[in-house]
Image 1: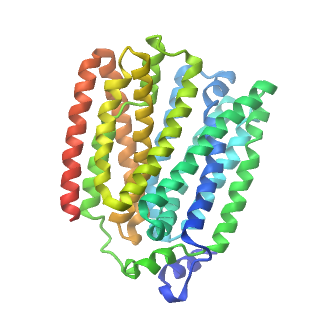
Image 2: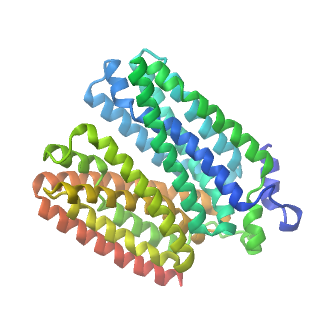
Image 3: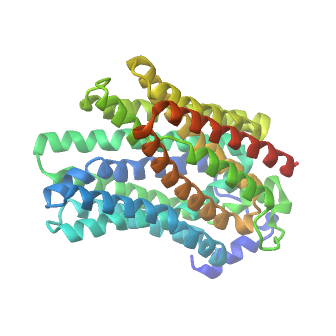
Length: 405
């Protein structure tokens, strides 16, 4: 389907278009796509550092390349989001982004030159930037019928299943063969499944906007081109709570340096945190559909609790803090996306997702630097500063609720 067909589908009246499957089935199929894609790229990311090191990379190069990749994954959405809204090629950008990821990962295991491997690592992250705003927009249409919170929560939970399986499979193949080529080559299988499922899903549901028009016909009306004021207030809330959010890198550093956990157990703890991530997404997603954005009040509370628990000298409390971190991540990656879909009209939704990702990326960088610096200076000061930032985030959330009403 070309851009003309997609644009025509976006303009088609509700009675002239009906989805080719139920909304929940669409969400689950899209969740399966994300599960398989996470299988691929999370499997690769689990060994990116050692792989680059085996090709002669220094710690500086590994840090610079992975940092550049994450910056590209978030920052480039400021371009891909508006591009999706302008061209209306949501399916095209989604498939192109996934294709770039699932092609680069198996090839990464075959290259024997450092510069080529570095380029592929960054290209994989560019693929995520290309697809994410368009993908979230497609998904947002179906969640209008399933419930915003529940739809995004189920998608996030399935996503995390892939994030658990991928690194385990790669680790197993690497342990058996001792070679990165077969360890990453095996990821071509779920990669092909991603593309096949996407092509089939596009053929079945060429116009997911029909889901939203069926439950709310007025969404097809054009907007004035500006993002709503409430969106910007929620973005400020998200920036505040993210800027005061400790990264797992700092948490794991504390656990190992204080002798609370052996380095070999850190991936296990991370996997447990991802399981909590999925459960928290499901719980808050269901709650969001009942009480609305008020459920987000738990996010600053969890973020404030993370350093108070994780940076202690007691193993049980430190592990609990890491699990609380996983719960906060689950809310960030599911319920916040549902809120954006409710705040922004369809014509500007991909742009909103791109801007939102840019805000989260900048705040994440600030939060990682802040918590790392304060950890080295004074843990009590770190706990107090994070608590103050989260209190400010709660105030912004209250303002956002008022503006929305």
